[in-house]
Length: 66
Image 1 (cartoon, rainbow, N blue to C red):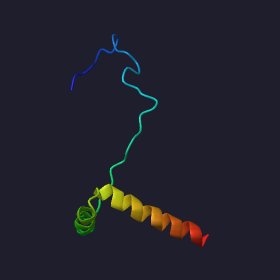
Image 2: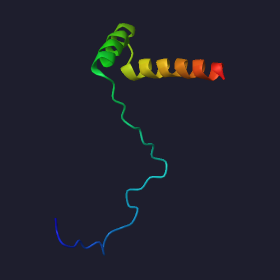
Image 3: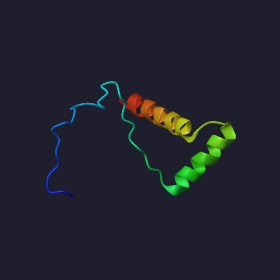
């Protein structure tokens, strides 16, 4: 690393996009991913669709308990 960097010609916020959406990575255990991958392939959908459906159902159950 250099001792100093010259940012005098830099542009603040050049790549900033207020409408940008950050998608956080989710890491599944290998056995869960294997199971969901098989189910997704059988249904002809992506794994993320299966995961989102399962999470929506869990949220509905949790909300129904309150």
